[in-house]
Amino acid sequence: MPYLRADVSREEIEAVVQEDAIAFDPQMIPGDIADELAAYDVVFLGEVHNLQNQADLIGALATALQPQGFRHILLECFHAFDWMINAYALGEDISLHPYVERYYGSVLEDVRALNMHLPPEERIQVHAIDINHDAGALGVSLQALAATLPDSQVLETLALELLERDPDAQTSVLEAFRDQLEERESEWADRWGAEWVDQIAVMIDVQLDSIVIKQRWNSDYHGAHRLREAVICSLVDDLLLRAEGGTLINMGFNHAQLTPLRGTNQEWLGEYLHESSEHAGDVYSLCVMITNGYRLSDEGELVRFNLLDDSRNNELLRVMWENFPEAAVFLPFQASFFHDRMIPVNLLGDVRAYHPAAVYDALILLHDARPLESLGLDLP
Image 1 (cartoon, rainbow, N blue to C red):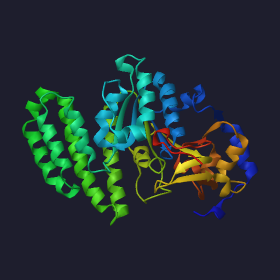
Image 2 (image 1 turned 90 degrees about the vertical axis):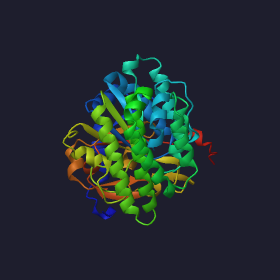
Image 3 (image 1 turned 180 degrees about the vertical axis):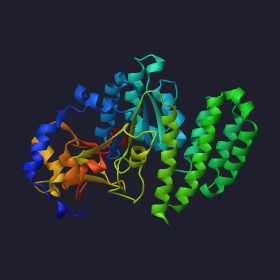
Image 4 (image 1 turned 90 degrees about the horizontal axis):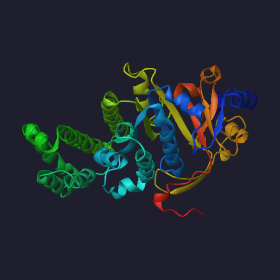
């Protein structure tokens, strides 16, 4: 959808922005925004990856939504570390794997600090919902898990076998262990607890799926991404089925789309949840975008960004920024204007005109973007 299809003037956009937008401090979510989000069972944040601003926003939203009954956060983290990030968030005395600490440590520290002041039944759980993009993740995770469970030599052995093998050679080992798990389910449930047996079974299944998906990643990119999204949808479905209280999901902003606009032409998680009979009407999808600063490219390079480089005078984010230059901005797309008009929107330099309400329920705009502090990057 090219920019030239836009049919709105700056004055029209500005009038709606001034009427509906809420300026706020991203470190402290105001009550009117919290109340808007808390009306839904699921709030889906579509992020720009690896930004400290985004990590801080998740922590602030957790603080604001926990009193409103939110009890779960789902992260785009390797599923192999699901048990680890949840145990850490709940305050258990464990160490995080370096990958987890590097990319999710900030969020986990915020949630852990919040949970320490809450009774156990009111604490926020944190779960991982992505495939394992690194084939070694399950092995190192099982090693750490074995150290926490009694009589777990069988897990240590499995971990070592996985770490000694290339991804293609892991499949037979995993399938054999899954058969063993079914045969000895009752015995191991008595030893570790039924919940741990179930957790390990899901870890094995996700690793098997991950191997197939990563094998196709370069030769069949779109097919691999569709399979990946199917695994994510399945994991989220299972977590939401068991969830008590509201859930905050944080993934890349493509995943939060209600209808496909960017990325692979497929059903993304946002659309899947929005169209699901179990969740229809209970999902609120937010795109969190940046105006300027520094971010990491898909290739991991530090990139300076300023949307004014690509945005014309009637581009939505530019209008929001120039009307609220100092504060973060929350703009719901409830007005008919966002449903009916083709409005230019700049998503990291990809400027397109479309109906914003068809893709997201709202947008949050952050300024002065900076990479995660845990990445240890020196900004120019």
